[in-house]
Amino acid sequence: MFFLIKYSVDWWNTLHQPASAFSLSDEAPNPPEVWVPLVIMIIAIYLFFAVSLILSTRNEILERERRAQWVQDLVEAQQKYNYD
Image (cartoon, rainbow, N blue to C red; front, side, top):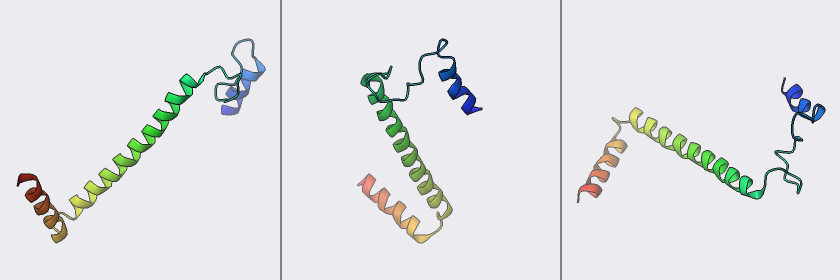
């Protein structure tokens, strides 16, 4: 299905612009003012996903191990650091 959609743009070019929206050539319809924010936001989304995954994994480990001594020591150390 994707094959048909992609190449239909080339076959019926009177209805659509050329399939160069993802091209970095000089004839590309999108200038660098479009590409730079796009690349920045793609990187930002990947970084946000990675940080969210790491933090949720950390929280899951702490929740599962909440009765372990090392977790209780960690909580006590954080409380001492935050309230003194």
